[in-house]
Structures are given as C-alpha cells and as structure tokens.
Amino acid sequence: MQAKEVTECHNITGSCEYLIRVETADLKAYKHFHSQVLGEIPQVNAISTMVVMDTPKDERS
Image 1 (cartoon, rainbow, N blue to C red):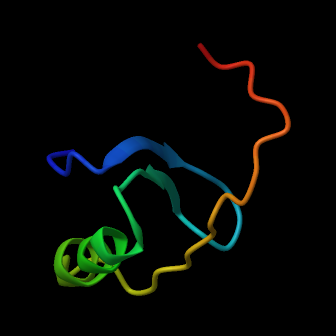
Image 2: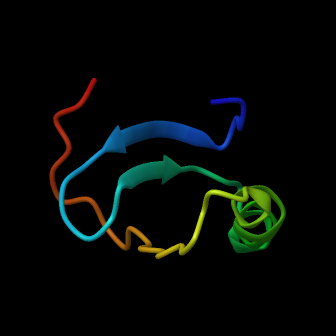
C-alpha cells in the first residue's frame, strides 16, 4: 500500500494470490523495486514478472 510504484493491486484466483500493476521509469528502477521492495517482504514467497509489450486496446479512463 505504501509503495508508489504499485498502481493497482488485485486479490485473484489461480496459482497466484495477488496481481499487482507496477509502473517504474525504466528496467533499472523495476529491478530495484523487485529486489529491494517486494523481495524484502517476508510474506512474499515468489515473484513472477510479466512485461507489457504493447496495448492495442485499453478503455480504462
């Protein structure tokens, strides 16, 4: 809740418990967030990363 990089957080079904949307300036900033923020939370057992390559449709405001 306190990490400014997290713009969305959803509790989901399936193999993952949470889906978060993270926005950083670049890959270096994401790597820092991945290891120094998410990686330091004791309750986080695994992290999977997906990178958006293109957005052909987005109707969110």
